[in-house]
Length: 306
Ligand SMILES: [Zn+2]
Image (cartoon, rainbow, N blue to C red):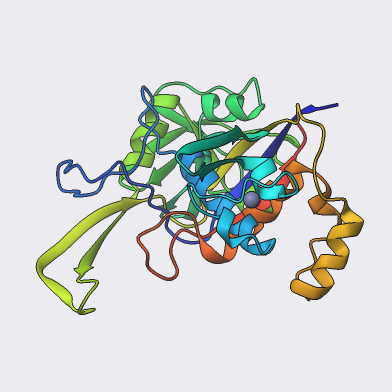
């Protein structure tokens, strides 16, 4: 079958900032990308797609095909096949669309501090969008199980009263138990409030690229999704061409020569594997970020059955 959807559960390993382009919003110079309506932060598929393409291209020794244009455009190139290509030939431009579409990474569980230790907040809609239906909670209260015996819990600055136990059953099998046992369910409205008032706000300095020195008065602040937030992402593969250029066998031979130790194996036998391999490197190299080391790394926790 040529059409499939792959859902990945991700966890931020660093604060992740994918900016809106530098508008000044209140005390923050660089705002984060948000979903319209809910105002929840998200990581746009376009940003993810650019990073995933780049890392996949490096893993496949197709550096030329890592960027936004001037790709090789070769029929035998898995990067150009998977993500599409743009290429100039004389005065003409040749282009082909890819066979994968990478969606936005959306928030599932968001970490906040409480007097009882770290808590991951969720909301009925955030869970339902991920496929966990039937959870509900009243507007100003919360549901949790093992976090504390007290009838109150603070989520950052916000104090909420317990409405009852939270029973997620076996709905989050891929989320590590220490997180899963510390989930607090709040209404969609409270979720947005808690998330937006617990984003990281960091201060940084602009560096002059020529001298490497800090520029005068170039301090700026930016928002970021904190570490240990859980997000999810759908990758839709519509392999309408049905002609993925490299068999796993050919690739294995190539990898022994060019990528010794980088054990991609069978993953390269299909476009979804190319995406997964690119995503794997986001754990080490990060998505977007501010060009700083130790920023934007995201771990692929699992591929989730839908
Ligand atoms: Zn290419």
